[in-house]
Amino acid sequence: MAWVNANTDAVDVDAVRFTGGQIRMVSKRLGLEVSMDRHSESFPLLNQKVTETPIQTSLLLRLGSSKVAPFLLGGPGWYKRKIELINGPDAADVKTTEFGWHAGAGLEVHAGRHFGIHGDYRFTFLKFGGDNNNGDGGFLGGILPSLPSHRGSQWTLGFTVYF
Image (cartoon, rainbow, N blue to C red; front, side, top):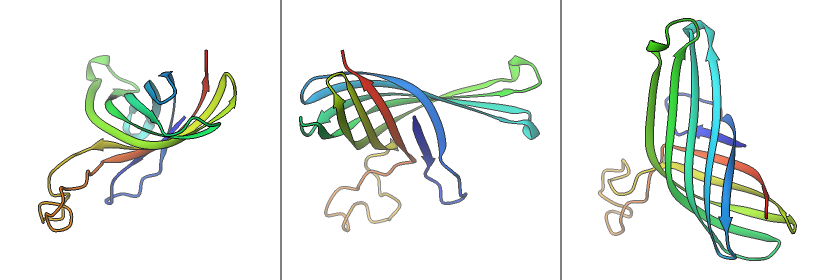
């Protein structure tokens, strides 16, 4: 499950819940994760149904190997959106795919030899470089490069079965 927040100051928007799955290949320190989530919502007054499907690939770096271990993650993401009419022709459907980088940190709890629970927080649509809207060309008056900005974030909670 994932709870996704849009990074917007213009409108107060609640987090949206997504459900999905993931596949992880991990060693003691490194791992690779591919995840896909899905959310659909209908808006009868607008005669629209919106379906969002983010697909993320993440490199995992485990920072410990005990029963409770923190980790860092990051990688590319493809964020698909389909808007279709509830009552109307399929030809009016609009499909878009947007690319963006994500990064975050999490914690994994090994509840048994073949079972784990993990949660993480991810910044999505990271943008590196630029002035971060502060007009000074960088962090600390241009002494350091700009910190990355982002357009959204998400909390993810999952259960893992190890083979």
